[in-house]
Amino acid sequence: MKRYLQSFQRVLRSEILKLRGTFVFWLTLLYPLCTVFLVTLIWIGNRQAKVVSTDQYISNLGNSASFFLTFFIVLLISLACNIEFKSSMLKHLLALPVPRPIIYLGKFTGIMLFIGLALVLTIIFAYLSLLICGLIYPKLGMGTSFNHAALVLNLLRSYIAAAAIYSIQYWLSMKLKNHTLPVAIGSTLIVLPIAILIILGITGLISRNADFLRVITYNPYSYPYSPGFNFVKSAEIVIFTTNTIVFIIISIAILAFGTWEFGRRNVS
Image (cartoon, rainbow, N blue to C red; front, side, top):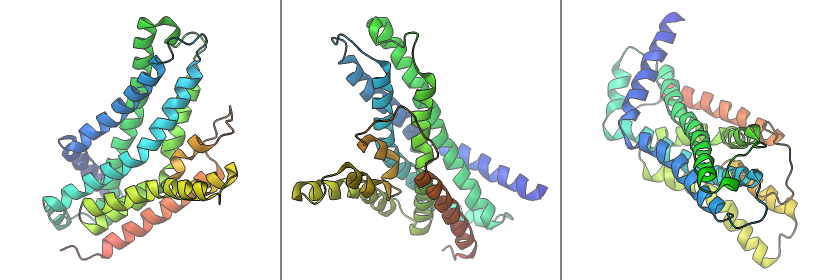
């Protein structure tokens, strides 16, 4: 057991060091930075309003971050996996005396750490944004009634809701051995529910809010941003909804299948 843990640590450390010197690292910085910048511009537009509430900032950040998160995950995982095939590094890894499941899980964990870093940076940038806005326009600052828990939970909810995307996109990227096709498949699955909603909405086949949500929430690639389409807002932020738990179970199952399949695969 100790030998497996040491092998896992070596693979994980190698993955982090490798990705740190690639565009994956810069993408991890750009996604939270650009998302917070966009929300900040919208927030500054409220400077003339008589009454402003930071709850609106938190809501805007949560909706924007959750929508762009799906594209960020698809692009980051596809890029990280493509590095192995582009440089033929995977063949060298498989030649080492390390079990294949350790390699598969170690790479996945390394990628997930960068995704987790994006969450932390989004929170940090959000606080910096509100601090700067408060210095320029005092009423746009955090104030004394800022809901810190809502800010963190609103973002965390999207990352947990995206559980199935992590495993599916990782398996696709490791299976297809290129960058373009996994990104195309992932992006299509993200925007397809919106396209369906637009078409069905125009034709009048969907008119109720529940029908809108049903189309989005049952697709793992669109589920993370589905709260933004819920027109009946709730003050309570629920992290582990029924759908989220189901997608977490699906994610674990696909990760287990991918680990098994990678161990039997003929990598050429």
